[in-house]
Image (cartoon, rainbow, N blue to C red; front, side, top):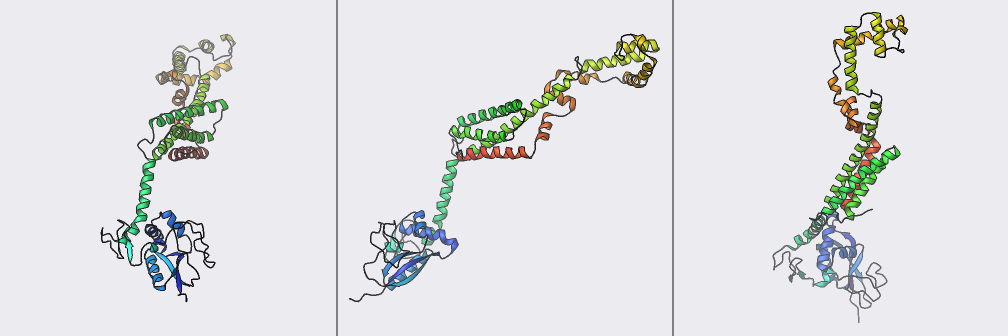
Length: 392
């Protein structure tokens, strides 16, 4: 019997528009009743969708596929034996040798959407109602092309909402994670101080390690998400700055202690008070050379304990160098009250009052580009670990 000419419908691997590729995949998935991922795999390359068709039927298939955004072509074919069509089951028959892009035996495939219904019938993608092909569903009244174009956006939006909900659950972060992370931040701050005191050197990389410890403390206690990440970043910043401030305060206190050792044992208040009294006594009581010699011995202006051993040259030097200072002090005494509270201070507070330079000022002067780099790495590490819930 003479064999009638047949044709096959081939997907070219392209879509009618690049911007409509997602809609075309979604429409194909809806018609074939498969997932978008599976549809994307089927439409990932040139592929024979249907073969062994009469020309009229092939044109109907092409029209249907072009409506959902696929570029297809009709190619003539001679039918020598029963042809293969796309199936939900693995194809076990051997495909024609000339159809190298058609579904191979054993490959998981799906029916072409146009093969599911006759060429003049359609199924509503919203309610599933089957009817004659039309732009609008007779059952629910929806316009078919609008539903098909909206499905990808709805799917993406739903995934985004679910992802946001997963990362911002009411339990994110848990109370135990907050407590654990705060404790870790405090321990790390004092650990940095200990390392600096022992090694007498600041290691900027410790700031990076602090971020990792804080992030690990949060996720190890069962929290992960955006809010946990923000919490970890904030605690890492507080721990890093706190540790740095503790280190600067410690070394600043050592400087103050060294300064105090150079000052009189009785303290600045008593020392300056005694100087005022000495200046007043000199102006009021010292007139003759003999009185000056006794004054110099009594107040340690001479290297001898015997007034008669002081020479005339030493008297002249005293009158030229020391006497003007004593006279000025007697005329305008030193305000010793400013030093009364200072003698009660110690450490960094003493240095700040004496030098007019606070610990915070010293911290700002001590910070450099390397410090800022490790600060950023520490905070970013803590945030990333807390937000993702992963160590790596």
